[in-house]
Image 1: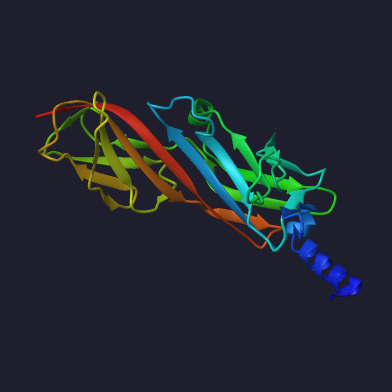
Image 2: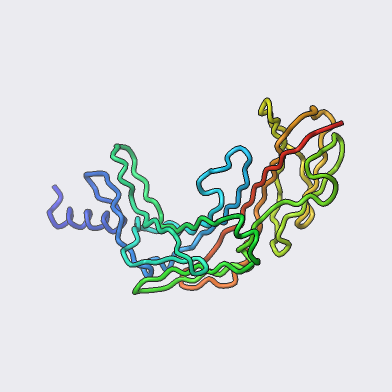
Amino acid sequence: MASASSLRFVVGALAAWGLLAGCGRTVAQPATLVDLKDRTLKFTLTDVDSLERDSTVGAHRFTLVFSEGLTCARLADGVTATLNGQPMKLEPGGVPDTGVGGREVCESPRATFDFDPERWDNEPTEDLRIILQDDTHSMVLVLRDAKAKRRFLRESGSPGTLRRNQAYSYAWLPETDVLQGPTKASLIHKNTGALGVLDVQQEGNTSRFTVPPETVEGQFILRMSGTAVAQVLTCEGVARCEGGLYHSGDVDVTVSP
């Protein structure tokens, strides 16, 4: 039979890993920023212009998430996060109280900022500077020219018309971005919802496709999406910073012979 001291050792070891034996619950350990300095900051800028889901929550959002660690961490009180001086929404992480049974999942601490796409479109392109700080530590992430509205711009012809068996080119903007491949493009029929995936050829920030000759005439949504490389100028106070700049855009088009 196990001794009381050995049982205390096992329980203590499990607690150190964020688990409590017996009750099966994951326990989040309070964490200051200095406790998270060995983790990776993962970021995503999401810029989605959808004609089908115009008011989707998070369609224009910058998200910052801490990578997983050996223990489940919940941010302690006193942490602040800003993006270019404006407050971000902090989600401390930990184990959400869902009120239902089953396997519990630890959520990593994160910060989000919902931006106004029209405002960003009208304002000059700038670096994004994200600062997290508390009484113990500070973290700084700076992304070159990331504060910008992204789009695919057709290089010639009427943007609302596509012809079967014709090739078209679209440039990713802003030009300071470096587009990763491959870009995706599709035609969605507005009446039937039928989806046709287009074969995209990419050269630098320019994406080209040919409208298949069997495409039916009618009204479509042209949807294009891609991810640009985020150029990290500063990554201080953490082990690493990594992420990308994602954009998806819809355009009403008419396909004709």
